[in-house]
Image 1 (tube, rainbow, N blue to C red):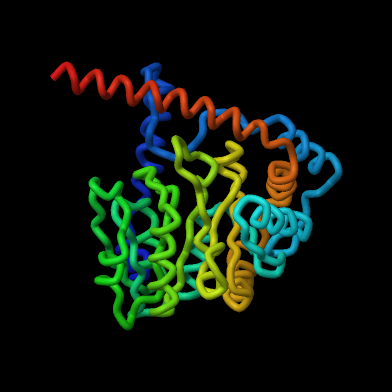
Image 2: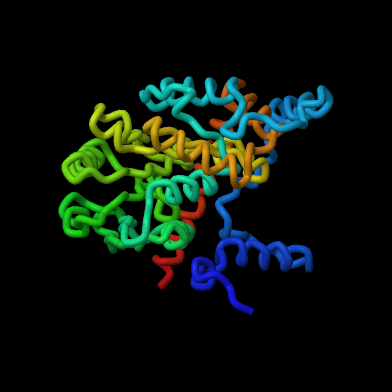
Length: 314
């Protein structure tokens, strides 16, 4: 059987494979701690579930606009302004079936054969596969532990060519946890503006950062880089809503109009019920986010302590 070239070279998701294996082992009665998928182990907060149940009971189970319901897009715009200091109008926002879907849509929209997309390594494993599916080539920056696994200005500049179409910036990073500071983001912005490439800013972990780190959206650093940035986020990590599949992206209107058109012919709208749940998450009480983060911080401290103890025993 002959398959299309665009899929024949794509590797399956190792994260999903590991997660499936861990779940199988747990069902067999084995004591498993699963570090595969980036999935909070908390239940979705009750006030979010209640709004979803209400939507079902009220019959909100039909098609919606393919790019998302207006009230959710307005709430996302308000979230960007409140949390990130970035002004996006609802017309610049597309709601998708998870942040992964948003990233896929963006790369399909801006990339063509022969284009290059720069990805700092270590990276989330789906980035290069999505780049390949868009017909482009992934160019990797091998980061170092001494620089907290972050790409500096010199390293990034060395990878830029006339074919560079975009940089995927993941801060806070999966899997390294690194968070780019203001000066580092300004350096990236300078290069983006100078060489006119897009910055795809994956900010899905923005609420789960620790110590003195502070999340900064690169789109907030001035109009020039704002016009070249496509910001991706969602409700999966912050609100423990991985299965609801609601992500979103915002960026230049011309790009986002094309993303919306692409989505309208592929998946159409995200789940109507999921959108109502996401609206409740973004506009409701955020104490649940801080509560989950506090628990993650306790676990992080415990793991660090045990790892230090193990090192000392050697």
